[in-house]
Image 1 (cartoon, helix red, strand yellow):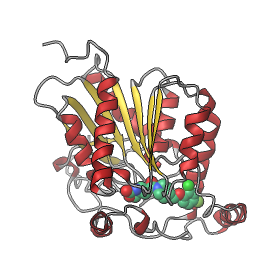
Image 2 (tube, rainbow, N blue to C red):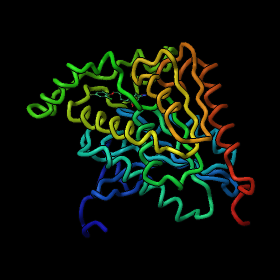
Image 3 (cartoon, rainbow, N blue to C red):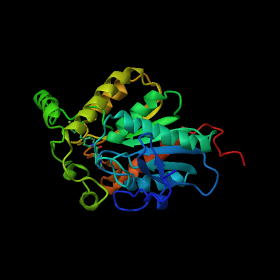
Image 4 (tube, protein in one colour):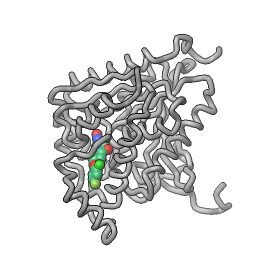
Length: 304
Ligand SMILES: O=C1N[C@]2(CO1)C[C@H](C(=O)N1CCC(COc3ccc(F)cc3Cl)CC1)C2
């Protein structure tokens, strides 16, 4: 409880957290949350993990479609993102994202102990989803990955650039490595415009220290892949310039899962759920169908 008379903690946008749905993470930072609750008893829980420099608001369309299937969808802005507290798009250890996700998942499981749990992750959120599921390999009914960060783009992460980044990280960790080039987010110019004008997105350069955390996450995932055995759906565009499709192909080919599906979108850019309308609609259908197919037969709803 805050000290009596203490000023209320406010979001980076100045809104008191007492007026916002939120959780407080293990470091005492307030994380803004969103919930999409079905009218009737939910059949499953679905946690959505957003990507780097964005927030969970742009997942509303996916969440609404899942809510219409009587799924209880929930998400939060990762520390340092959107309406959550924390140093903008920086983290002391990538594990913080996984720890916070498990905290939110455990909270929702405590409220709905009999429901299966799914994770949906995009880009860096895909890396979070993979490592979260790896920490609790028996806990998730399925993992949906939309252009996940599994391998770095070899064009942008050449051995020389990686070496220089590691060297500079010791000297100037806050140095910018450049911002995300939004033209590669989507082929739909309206979606690129929405991304560019979304004030809850982070449009400045990514720090070297953050890039180091992303590289460490990629290394962890590569080590984990052979032991992955949980069900997953992989969706990736073959023209993705932000997260290399070879990472998804490698995960599909080298994981131990017997229940796995990969769908490649020819010409697809990075944010497939925000790509051209026919692709975005296909993604919504693939995600909702796959999750529905992975609901336990008895998962009609919670006890009346
Ligand atoms: O619709 C969407 N998608 C978003 C934004 O809006 C894209 C963004 C997202 O998560 N990534 C795209 C950028 C990528 C950079 O990766 C690195 C950079 C430096 C480095 F040293 C090592 C790595 Cl791995 C991380 C993953 C989420």
